[in-house]
Length: 138
Image (cartoon, rainbow, N blue to C red; front, side, top):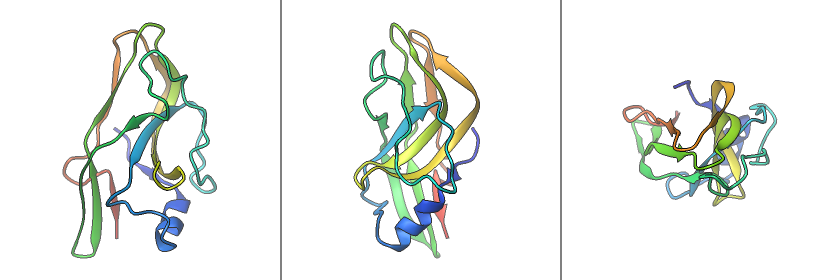
């Protein structure tokens, strides 16, 4: 999977106390809207309709570890799976991570390179790095 593209607003929000990534409710939303890492700040992209297997707001992620060691904060997330039902999910190209417990502030996104959709019973696994984490901040 491609690397996480961090939003510039993430660092500014952390510096001003706008994220508590250790306790945040982080969600992963799919969208075909093109993100702008330099200027976007909150989750306002158009997701697939919340039917056919796509939950409203995207999947809620499970944090497996959020810790600092040697001056490096690492956020580790469990993989998440989207499964299409009758009618499918999509179209989408990006998987966007955002903090739903902090006014939907953006964290980062993954670009799958092409617009796609999931048919009935097809799955998309957003596979986070189990070793290095989904996000590191030095």
